[in-house]
Length: 591
Image (cartoon, rainbow, N blue to C red):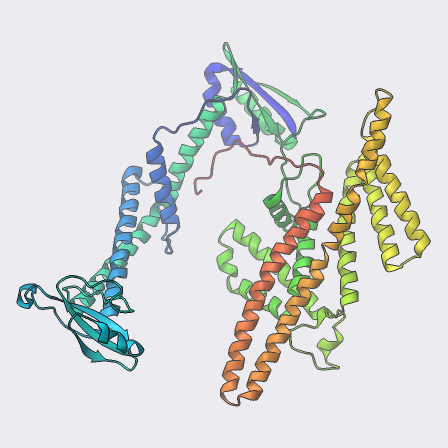
């Protein structure tokens, strides 16, 4: 990044800012505080936004009109909102009619006699369960059973006023003066009207590009007005300032030459924090960057952990799902929706992520010998590929701790390299030595002496590195430097807890595998104890059980896989949080 300052004549400010917005390469720095922004017609803007969201949400998208087509935005917005209101009204009426038809169907076709023929009395209808038959004997009002069903009684109660709600232990049937046949006919008419309104809704989607472009232009004008109030205006000149990538210099120089502007560029000074613009070198790194940005934006002087986050998330996902069969289901679902997801950039990134997760989960599932929890035959090809036993508590716990130690050590190593020559680098290397020493002592890898030496050396480096950041200007600063060093040792508890946090990989993976086996065992027991019909029950148990296990496994894999990256890994790997680069640019017409 570089700081860019453009100066020009005040009379040309509007045209210059418009060209700068079209260029779209600068993250602007306000040179004065703008006033509150108010659109020219907030109500009209809200209506247009609502209408645009409405046609974009349509399940049927027709071919849009070409740019340049005659377009009355107010008329189109009014048509879209009127269509929405009409559909809501029809849907409510359909729901009411469906409810009435459903309640009247057991009673058949009938019509209430006029009220004056019954001397002011009315009929109130109830569908009473047979087991509640005794409730009729307590009624003070005249009643009659007018129909029977295997488990229900159809009862008519006579009363001038509506009976109390607790007259019988069931609600009364909502029957009006309209007979069943007439309500069915009206329901059909409403269904046809809904189909016509939905067809109109689909036809209105042809305006989406034009309406989207109209809204985008309005938002661009609002942002342009905001920026115009943030420039520094003095007498007859103005200045606009911002951050821009170094490779945008030729475009800015061309703009300055075209508009007769003064252009000044300078690199970031010490203590300045330019915005962070990430440009991924691969699609995997870009996806990892999206995952990282969901939690935080790396600082300008830190690093992009996107690729490592992508790889580690795939590994953690695989260890928690822990089944090759489940991985194949994810791959099949991805293949089924492959073309649909390819319709947008976000969808293309999502399917690439799903492919990576499926491959990692399948590879780990094969290594763990887990295929929907089914035991593999001894000596089979798949059985020989099994090299991981998820039920071996000792080895799996050790594997999870080793993965956690390596994951955090990678973060510390990057921090040390980026801050080489500083106390922060020394402290990071010290923590790596502490991790190595703890692993050596805990797993008895290279001997107790080596482990103790690594621990002592690492903790000493942490003390030295943590205190080295404080400058010495007076004798008392040495005391504060020692205090800072000792304070740095408090990170031992965080390091210990973060590494042990990776044990969730073992625990969740074991839970997923155990549940798969358990459901299979239950299904086998049911099939064996109930010949014939037991096969159906066993199949239902397998489908339901594995379905629940897959859902739980996916939720756990995503939540805990991200948590280990966000909290543990980035907690040690990103020493500062940055602000994302927001280019002052025109929005795309297609929105």
